[in-house]
Image (cartoon, rainbow, N blue to C red):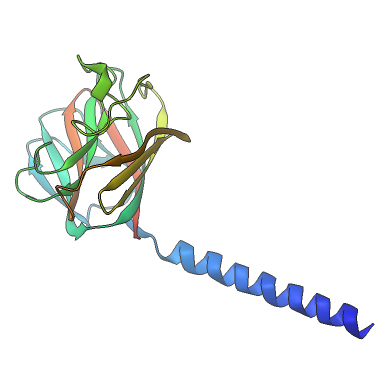
Length: 194
């Protein structure tokens, strides 16, 4: 009986430790956009960003929502919806918060109709091509982007589109949500340091 009590006690302690670890890991996430305000972002360009039904939406102009903070190694999760002809993306490690480009940031693309589909939706422009470009138009999608050192992983809707791509030119920078054309919506954008 004493041995059984010891085993049950050990299992209880292990379960409590696991629950504590899960709670701590969920607290590591910083919500950048929760559907209510853009407090963590600055607008650049003339895109008509606005909040509608828990999403930040743009359908005219050209521009970015640029995070106020810079990040080095991180995991980023973002939900997005785009029209079939949309041109968008999530730029990471953007080194110039006033002028975001594919040269001073890494562009995780959202562009189903890109003329060169090898760097279309699911790719990192000029770093990691996709062999069979997934389509993101007319549905809610989830990007899970990991940047650790000079290595990158991109998961779109549970499918790995970039696996361990390497490029070490940019170590730290801002996150930028792009509007370039069509209809673009983002909701639930969160990040955690690695």
